[in-house]
View 1 (cartoon, rainbow, N blue to C red):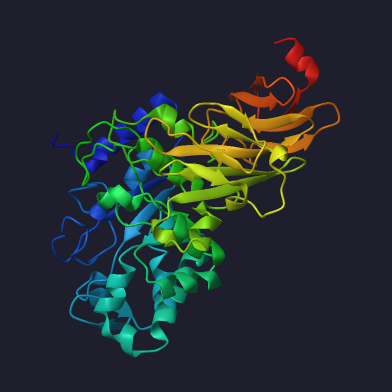
View 2 (view 1 turned 45 degrees about the horizontal axis):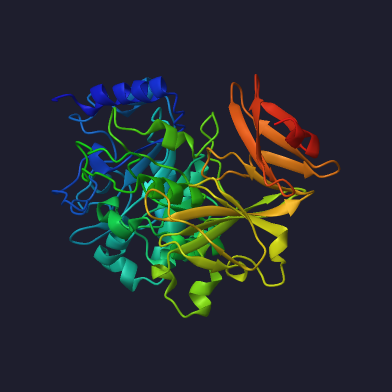
Length: 456
């Protein structure tokens, strides 16, 4: 159609609401602001002239579209143009190069800059094309302290306005600097979705980011395998569950970007609570130990694990294998654990396997990869949790376990949530599932015991 973004986006919001999918943030890419040159198909090209709305995109401005959408915003920016309005009309001195520029006093500039978005709903500032800014500004390569001042000024400016920062296309030393700045909460851990054949594989980068205290954002993705219209990547996404799984197991934001009437609502709801808060593991997904012990490049070793630590139960492991096959227990956890103390739950088949040796196997799901849980046996039960969620035993959901008479679980939920919570009894081998409803937000307890099994 010939509608502007200003006319279309409220319809997308109404569509999301009609599905009952509780998006808590939206992210705008680089299409909303003016640049000094053409943007190429990969997103590169022109530098920002003025970080505000193009009249052709939002005729009534950024505050107006926020009044229609009423969700916090994550917004993209790129390298600064040497001919930008900030260079021409504001009282800041700049280091100018042919294709990009940087303020001489980044902290002063960013403290001022982050006062200019009144009414936008700006929650997180995405600084993209960080490598391009560095490569194109000569002063960043000749002044030994300027790059540090640039990143410090950006973080302080964002924090002074109550906002956070996302890095995108950074160099490793940019990422390392984030350890010093609490405002920098995450960074893109992948290439652009346009290269989606291996773009999902975040495990190796996750190790680097997690070690310095930031989360690895997987980037946006399509949640359905329907052809998409209007975007740079038209699809279809052949493995949408893998993309959704990686976004969830990253521990960062989950960012579906399907077009209107193309979202897979049930898949997206498998990532979160009823209020939209992501049910995530306690650590981002990372390569298995065997990737290193066998001398495999972790960037190409697509066998990953992560975990949830549950009070009174112990550690539940989640295991992903892009090519399913046999595994050893000590590939997932430290040596010394008895196999009989664990069971494997296959997420795709819902099969529970009680271990009697240190070898086990995940089977291929409908997209070809394998995904499952390794859960401890406690009180004669192995806890599975919410089978409908990609992280079935998230610590956000399950607060406390006791095992005096079987297994008692404290479950947290939000208003109007209805859950199915499951566990398997070791003696009978039966999978027992209980329905839990929340009229208001809070916690409740459920019990799995031999009496429960007797009445199934």
